[in-house]
Image (cartoon, rainbow, N blue to C red; front, side, top):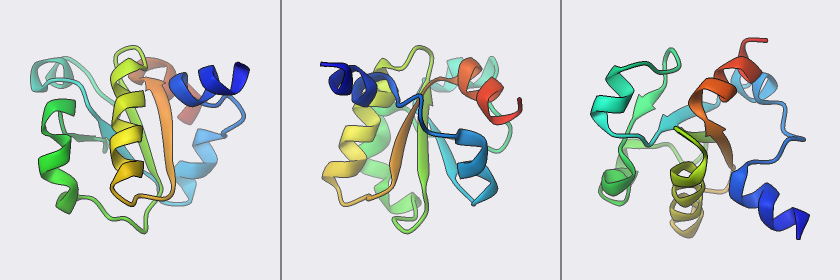
Length: 104
């Protein structure tokens, strides 16, 4: 059961700062309005409802970290990416907490 929640909301064992040092890409799946209200520096905004149509903008060979406001949409984004052949995808959860994990 714990694995289910870790997969849904992000795995606390992942060291996101190390992933970023290794060149991970952050995909923020909130709406454009939410993103413009604040986001992680150098993150890319692709709203969840547009993700499937924008897969060609992402590099399958790079590590991808998804984020949103709370972790629900980023979990859905992770699932979409994995179903489309992206192999190294992590749910970062809410963008504010992810930012703290990256820049601690």
